Amino acid sequence: MIVSSSTAAAPRSALQRSGGFPDGITHGEDKVGWGRLALQGDVVWSPRIGAVWDRSAENRSDGAAGPAPAPAFRDFLRSALLNTELPDRMRRNLRTAIAVEEARLAGDIRLYDHETPFRYAARSPVPEPI
Image (cartoon, rainbow, N blue to C red; front, side, top):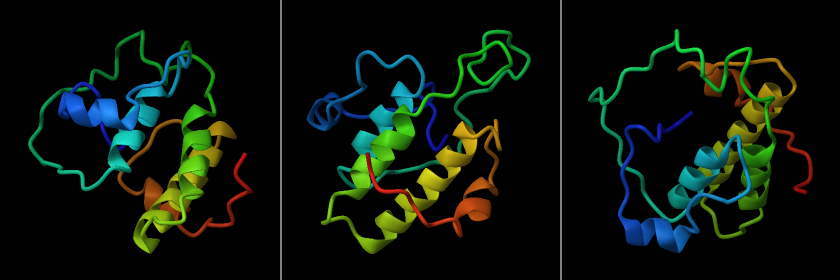
């Protein structure tokens, strides 16, 4: 996940303009919400550690007991790719993110690491948006 809701911040007005986090989605709504926000413009990132992720927690959504992978974020990425005014760099990044999400939905990956985007960047043939 490119951003963690536990450590992210955004002006309320920007979240409102983006449409915020979708209702009715129980898995992936945070990715969709932050993705909507990122499509509005530049995102600032800091390497400062702002949270600690407890991988031993029993209620993790990526654990064996967590919900099955849902296509909400992949579907959001596909719809974002339809915007013909996006810069080429963003279009390439969207295609990479779609490839990663397709692999996650297929069960090929469960957790992301720093190399995940590089492994899937070459898998650009993206199915037609739904």
